[in-house]
Image (cartoon, rainbow, N blue to C red):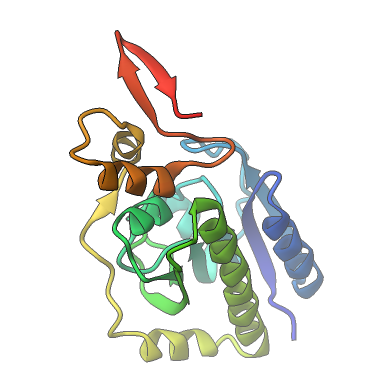
Length: 225
C-alpha cells in the first residue's frame, strides 16, 4: 500500500533528509519535495492548490502556517529533534547544559504553534558524561530517522494507525517552555559566568567545528578556539 500524495519538507545538505526523501518518493503515489537552508527562512515555494494526503517535516527550518497545514487530507507530521520537555530551537544544547541523562526525538502532528501538536511517538537515548554536542547531535539524527521510518511504515500499512498512535501517547504532554533564538544566543555567551563548572557546561553544550561560545570584549566577539 502506498502513502498517497505527499509533500515533504527536508533540509539542504542533510544526508538523513535525502535518505527519507528517496524512501517517501518511492512509497508515495505523488511526491513533492521542498528543502530549507537556514533558520528563519521563509517559505517562498508556491504550493499547489490541491491537497496532499500527508505533509512530513524532517529537520526543516520552515514554520508552517495554517494555510499550509490545511493542505492535508490526513495529517501534517513533524519529526522534532527533541523530547516533549524541549520545544523550539537549540533543544539539544539546553539538554546537555542541564546535564540531562536522556534525550530523544518526538513525532507529532503539526498545528499552528511550535512543537505543540498531538504526540505520536517519543524515542530516547542515553547521554553519557563523555558525550559532547557533536556526539549527541549524531545520536539524535540517527534515532530520529529510525523513528520516521517506523511511523511511515505504519501509515503505509494502514492510515488508521495514526489514531492508534495518538491514543497510545495521549498522556504525553509538551512542556510549556519554548526555547527561542535569543535563548540559544545567550547560552553561547561566556561573559559573567559564575564558575569554571558552568563554563565547561556551556562549552560542552555549544562547541562544534562550525559554532563556538564566545566572550565580548570592547564590543567585539572573541570566539573560543
